[in-house]
Amino acid sequence: MPATSPAHPRRRRRTNRLLVTAAGVLTVGALAAAALPGSASAGEQGGKGQGHGHGHQHGRYQDVQLLSFNDLHGNLEPPTGSSGRVTELQPDGTTKTIDAGGAEYLATHLRQARKGNAYSITAAGGDMVGASPLISGLFHDEPTIEALNKLDLDVTSVGNHEFDEGAKELARLQNGGCHPTDGCYTDKTFQGADFPYLSANVLNEKTEKPLLKPYWVWKKKDVKVGFIGVTLEGTPNIVSAEGVKGLVFKDEVETINKYAKELRRKGVKSIVALIHEGGFPASPNYNYDCDAPGAGDGISGPIADIAKNVSPEVDALVTGHTHNAYVCTIPDPAGNPRMVTSAASFGRLYTDTTLTYDRRTGDIARTAVKSANHVVSRDVPKAPGMTRLIDKWNTLAAPIGNRAIGYISGDIVKDGTESPLGDLIADAQLAYARTLDPETDLALMNPGGVRASLTYAASGAEGDGVVTFAEAFTVQPFANTVNLQTFTGEQLIQALKEQVSGSNEAAPKILQVSDGLTYTLDLTKSGADRVVTDSIRLNGEAIDPSASYRVATNSFLAGGGDGFTTLGQGADDLVGDDDLKALEQYLTANSSAGSPLAPPAADRITIVK
Image 1 (tube, helix red, strand yellow):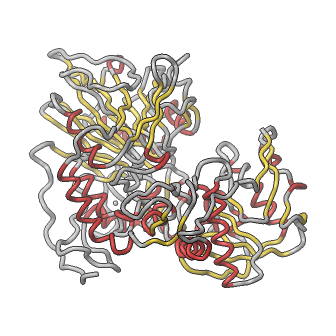
Image 2 (cartoon, one colour; image 1 turned 120 degrees about the horizontal axis):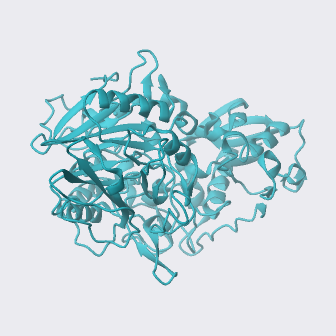
Image 3 (tube, helix red, strand yellow; image 1 turned 90 degrees about the vertical axis):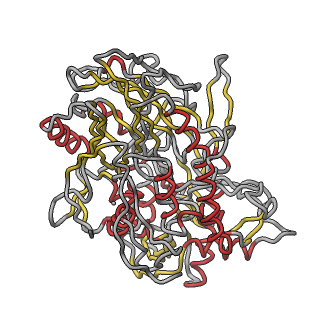
């Protein structure tokens, strides 16, 4: 990579388009979600999403359009497989699958949605970067920040993945500058984000001040809308310890309520919370009626409790994190209706919300709020500027990304309680671990670390069935290492029970297991009892609680991530190479053009429902 270029003055922001008021102290160096876009005086935008509420326009009132999305994860190119599709409910009750996503199409859809709306804001709910495909991840997500600048994003909250590379790297994404290790990738210094990242509930441990700005105010003429940004309080449980070192994550509700009061003291009464925490919808269809039979009945999970407790001073919640789609009305603590939205993930949807601003009170007329999710379909023209940006970074990534590393005979998907791809990755880590220690017994892989399926159909010119390095990078983009630890049989059983108990009881995280480990998961039971202890076998033999077992995991799990505290308590640690290298070596060793690898059967965990 080229040497680091010298620092230079920041370029001017888009101050001709809006005025910005911000509070907070930058304490680093010099950075559930969904969004709420809506239609202004021109009326509702087109689309098939299920809308809620209504909009209006009088001299006293001004409709403000809020366009939003969440959990982009650097998906600049159209995502593939199930990650690139949404399901739409049809009027006759049937469903239709639609290919969706891609920054070139998202840019066009957002620009079309803004037409006729003089008062339009674009916001995001976190995880814009991190766990990204190679075109972005290889360059520390600089391409995604450049793309978001081109999308005219106005503001976003941080998400947990914004902390994958730590607070200093987040500050670099916000402020610009070349990467401290890899330097500059082109002859131009990285400029950073044109939009503010908000981190109201992320504090510097020493100063106890927000890492980045806690809130931001959009203003046009006499209309002011404040945005408060938070990520889930449990971020330290799902990010590597190094990524959140020196940081404290506070309660989402308490933080939002604190800054809502501060905004109102400053005369800002229209407030939107950008919350990187989400819920679980009752339907997989993006346009289902979340309020049938009653308000908010179609959604459960953390965001439901948050929405019921966030101050009535907040007028709408843009959420994310769970990668689900919903547009719900959940009453605030005062019993007033309030919109809660999420636009799935990977740029497949955007939310269009109308916030009707009352000039007399300076607040949002809640009864007039209207919102719907819309598909980022691929039947619109590509935005040329975005195409040029993607082509630029693809040219730099191509020598690395286009290299063939393996061959498969069919799709190897990441979906399911036990997934074929999860099993493949666990097998790859076991095989790699045995090159370090031949006595390694098994490998365990966290499901959240499997980011995309391997598809048989070619993604480029490589040909069907060919797995490229870029595709494998998209599957495992975190640069975790493969770690070996020794556990007692009792600890191993406890780790398996932690999949469905403790912090994972409400939303189980089922570990993907290597060949030879089998057990029964009884979902008719509750808590830790769902893992049937007597069924746990390794190569057909029962686990001996007093015996020792050598276990391979990635560094995230080895640090106790995802609520697996027991996996952070192993002995005789041995740190290996990158987990992606383990997958590459396994594919290369076990497949060829003439003998491609078949999808694993995913039959190691017996599930009782």
